[in-house]
View 1 (tube, helix red, strand yellow):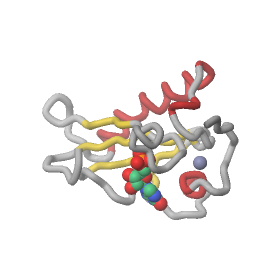
View 2 (view 1 turned 60 degrees about the vertical axis):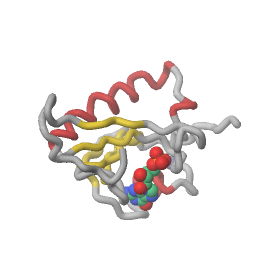
View 3 (view 1 turned 180 degrees about the vertical axis):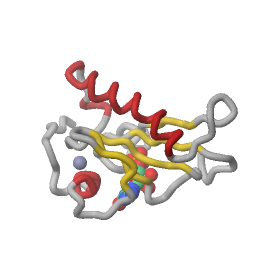
View 4 (view 1 turned 90 degrees about the vertical axis):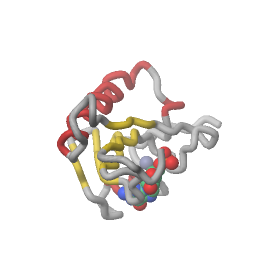
Length: 124
Ligand code: 5GP
Ligand code: ZN
């Protein structure tokens, strides 16, 4: 299945969150990225880093997205500490990116889960 990259998909729940049509607990945003708390957290800290642009998954990522992905990856550790993850190495956090049905992806707008805080966690 080939899915086109569009700026925003009116049927996408995360595009609606970016547009403010669905409320969320916003952690951070800038011109191209949006970060908000997961509605069903697995861990004491659990937020999602997404591009504002509707990219369905990692399967649509090409070399032209290197900068965007780099920004998502480098923002995550900063926000993890800000949101209450304990310092590395005794603390730390998990970054996870489910891709496609067999990869466990439920929402088809690219997102990186960032989870942390004291264990036990609900999952993972
Ligand atoms: P996936 O399984 O696609 O990797 O993860 C999707 C995540 O989005 C899930 O952890 C789920 O709890 C979260 N999620 C789904 N709908 C909403 C919503 O409306 N608001 C927020 N904040 N999170 C959502
Ligand atoms: Zn979307």
